[in-house]
Length: 178
Image (cartoon, rainbow, N blue to C red; front, side):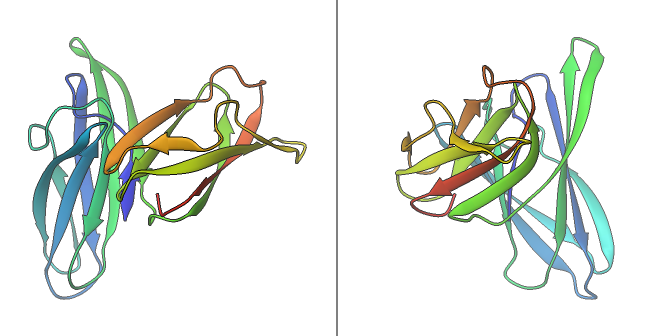
């Protein structure tokens, strides 16, 4: 399971909510990935039939782009990342992000213009293409979004600023699972 959101830099606070629906306790491994590679690993014990909140603040190396790979050798779990942005002494917003498995094709519905698309590459260096489908059903390649190169074990942000106003479905197609 991958969650691609937030940052580990100053001004961000990240809380991972993990739910274990099974009766047996599990341990979830959390691997952080950033713009230049791995950020560290955290292991979180989750008792059976419970939810735990675990802070990631200070546990992963600092980076402006964060992707989390979550796994367990046994059992199942649900995961949500709560990230809070902080500006000085005031809160600047809270987001909740759930995850998805890595895949060679991914569609993200309901993305407004001006958003940022975050891509995590858990494998070798590869390429991917980004297409936009507008409200009228027309599909086009994002300008600069064809055969985009991404380094091995890294995270990249692509801006959707400058596209025509509206809401889009974004399709990402990679040569390998992203």
